[in-house]
Image 1: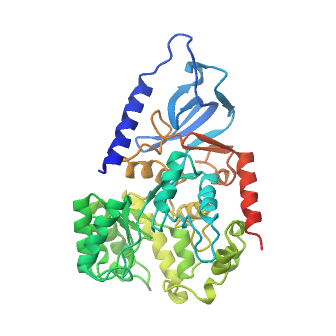
Image 2 (image 1 turned 180 degrees about the horizontal axis):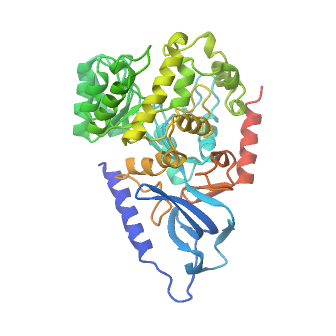
Image 3 (image 1 turned 90 degrees about the vertical axis):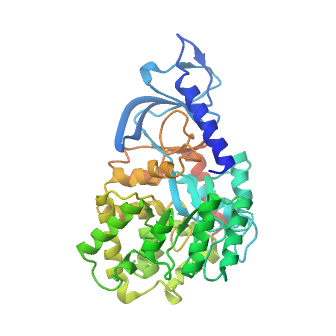
Length: 452
């Protein structure tokens, strides 16, 4: 564990201990940054969803400092901002476990404000943690600025510039690059296609010695089994799964699904499926529906036009003839992994093709639901599972004392109505409250900035 992460985890543990021992004394009046009262909490206990009505949630210094039944809540002084959430629900803030953060400087046709706008769109939709999966210059400054309060955005965990066939030319180079990224302060290594087996194994070995996680794609020369054996922390996009059983252009069999699930469980690897984005990339999505997404007006014109012209110049993943069978196999595989008990962690790969930060969660939820995953498990994958992934470094993903004050206020129970996530009533991110009114105002400003 990195020293900074160890210190953060120690501070969180001490804070949690203090919170748990800070029971109200008699009729003592307290001060807090925020109190959300009369709210119903949606959380998970021992993996099962738990709905607790008439609760009071207390926030101090960026953390949840107390959770009380209304009748047991202490009194608070006039300096406390009170939000009466009668009839509403609180859900832990969601995580984007395969997201992207644009450069913080002028970059090609992208305006300088692009990074800040995309960071806000994540938060506006209740995404309060992002594992950024492709490092750019100045991203570490973005992370630091958010932590210090100079910038508004989700908490960032960042992979450095990727390890790929385009960036790595030798085993010696890959070894030096791992150490350099560790010393620069990146949180993990991003694996892209194109690495040779020798280069990949050198990266993995050096990463283990350096205490660095590595995650992402599965290079063709490496293959799924070796990537799992090497300790790759997550397999993103379900990459390498269908190729391992040669089911890219035919229906996958139950025996093959069983084999893939067994391998995943044996090696204790997590998957970040990104089903909606991959459906688009391979050509299985309806282009007309994609072009009608209203949120694409919230990205710069250059980005939007690139998306709209994708089918004129698609990526190497596009294969119209095999797209439908691949997508059906991916959905069957996701269902089998869920049924088998594999760890699934939520991610959408935004901002990528028609996947706008924050808004992309709704399309991913729909695809995961169509794969047969219950809403409770989908939401757990975006909250508790992400918090568990970072448990050695941070404390978030639950509505509990000592956890980072990241949560979403909703009109309806999200376990029963996923559409309630489309227009939250407000978002708390690291103890900073964003009202619905403030969110709408900023979103309209972004829309106007990128209008034709």
